[in-house]
Length: 105
Image (spheres, one colour):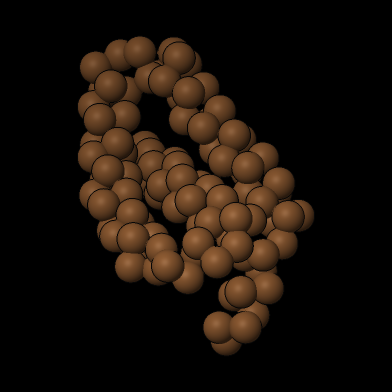
């Protein structure tokens, strides 16, 4: 399992794909912020709640990166992939939380 994760994180293709996915997820979040639904009070509340959920998740993600930092620093591509993966997961959690909150409220 560790060998598979090592090969995956050493891939430059994954780094590019992860970066593109991160920009797409950020674009979705910004799009909702500037949309008609995101400008009213309900939309601002949804964005605030989703951001709080993502902030808590970011705390856990960065602690996981910090615990594996010596392993990540063996290869610069692996380190960039690890950091980009935590950023992408942070945005993914924010977007999923936003979608769930839109359906609930």
